[in-house]
Image (cartoon, rainbow, N blue to C red; front, side, top):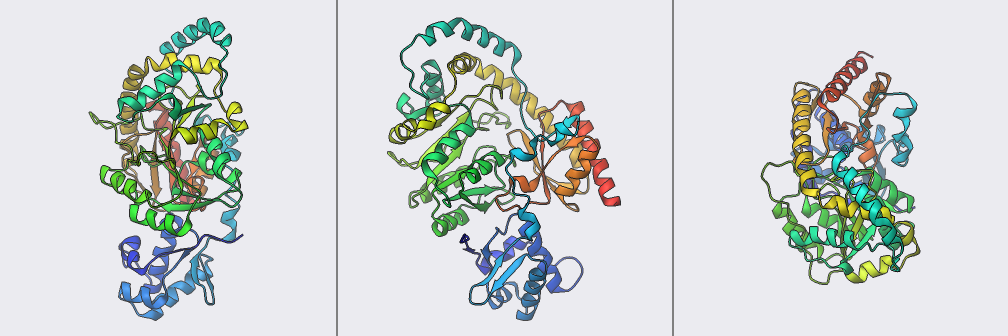
Length: 475
């Protein structure tokens, strides 16, 4: 299979490598170490074409021989492959590719090993009182619904109207023809994959990204292409260059309280992204699953990336699982009516539609949405701040406090997340290492830490994490 190769210009390396000259060893060793870290952190994507030795030497103010020596070190460590006439490209040791198994394959390990604290899943608790009330009302209404003749998949009467109202309230006029209901956000992504992806189709994703989406695209035999996030968010110019070079069938982005980093795309980047997307023929999927989990005090909802009127290449995927209840398998696709009709006509649409009872419960639970969200946001903010306070005392990791979402993205300064995760499992703590969130299998120095558990449970989790780190360093 041919690989997707992207050129990384020499001019990007000073910013990409940061203060790489600090530390010990030769200049060549320090440069190689900085480039290795950029590969493991996902800033240098797999198969990136590195600058010629002479160009990089000029940009960094080095002798060409120093850069040549750094490339040689990286080749010896299987992080760079050089082919005569084709240049040097970023690689990963073959052992890392063995770890790119589907997301679901490792999720059950904590349970099988009996670990009492599972931080591999970020899910809020059910709104008990509102949920029971919605279930009772749905039960009463179910007989009449079952007698209705309209059995079109993905169309749900009151629920359809309720979801459309969410978009209307934020300034995006939405009618029934714009919406297709699905049994969750993953079902929506499955339907879009079925319609738009073929074997070897290219899909551009953030790195890191939501592992469920990554697994779905891989199951469609698509070829993920990573677009690294910066510490502060999205590099729109770099994304534009990637789309030009790759010409993907589908582009998957999470601009609102990104999973797993919690990042929020700023208004300037949203405007710039909307402008640049006009020149690319790719289906752009904006995952809005976390959009309601805005933990900024007193903030207004972020604007959506503007699309041209009549644009059939932009869709929004939403879900009630994070904002209301994970057990409610209701999601949707919001797009151009022609796109919605195309998706609804697929045989898979009926299988991926929510059940009549789920639609009834969801419609009634939506009536309590604001009250549930107000409580949930307040609770999550307290738990996020509690976790951040505990982790800030640790000298061997760092993080940014997320503006929303359900998790914190922890960078390890002196450990590999896979080894730390293995050690934590022995102490009864199940974690997800960073490479699960990487299209390339990189991000070895990161962990996702959800803040959905009560404070005392998070305290226990941090204590076990500290113990695991100490044991790992001791060995």
